[in-house]
Image (cartoon, rainbow, N blue to C red; front, top):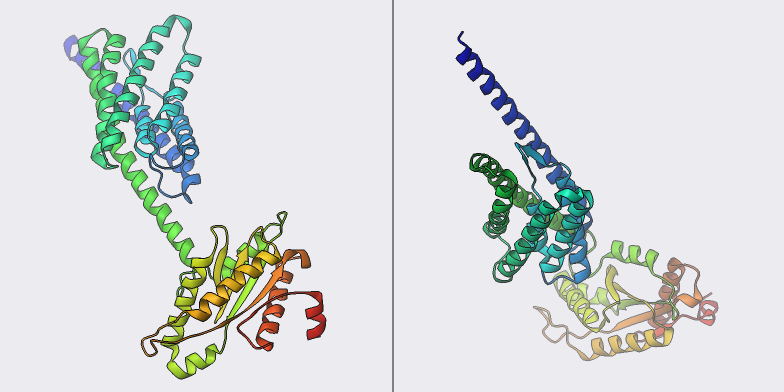
Length: 385
């Protein structure tokens, strides 16, 4: 074997080993990127889809999460000749695409701050150039985000802008066209591939989170009326607080509902239940919880509400139901009435006890002629005893 063949063989071996080392580092960065995205975005699984119209607090948190991912990527950059490259523009694009300018600014500040903190003073020129690149990148994609929808190609467009702004900085680091082309080719390839896979991962995560939210909603929703079901009501009862005015419970029962089912059929009964649920929900305040407690019984949880206020709400519900029609396919002019029992937290030690008191008050309303509301009192309990 000639000396020339040996030299070429050694050079080829070194090039192959360098390539394998770069690819290994790239795979490590990939794993780091996807693992951190999956773990750090888990707290958002019960949140609605984050957009530039989401409240600022959530968007700032998103920016912090993306910034943390970017910082971790910076500490695991890939060495290619004299340059080190990383995937930091991916988290910036994530922050801008989903959270808009506030999110991206937080991410950018974390990147710049970290770069200043870890760079020796004599290398500050590179930090300044990097900071300018990040600033231009965020400013440009901020303008783009105002006019584009959240799609894969727009996400890749943002990454492309980041790559474009980074190329001059790469040349300043390399000072050689041959090295510049080698480093730039790797940088472009790695970031575009990472952008593609990242967007797919985020899409799948969002789809998974929305499916979880949908399943949770189904588990807590009454299928017939669309209101809270018994499980959600029980959970809310166990969590309801005792504010200054305490809380009140209103238990509602449809008068002579068995007669409706027996006379007009269960389909008519279902129509009545659905319409009554809609009526009660329309009268509820934003913090009130209306649900179907079982059969023809409905429960309204009224936080921070006195017994007197609960009585007014109950009477409004009773009168609204009494003067409205509840048409069904077989009976277009069906009318119903409801009886209501009211209990306040001041008369009970637990929410279960308050519910039992509301049930006793409801029993009194039905026993007294129906189509009325009753507030629980100690005297009422003695009377029933």
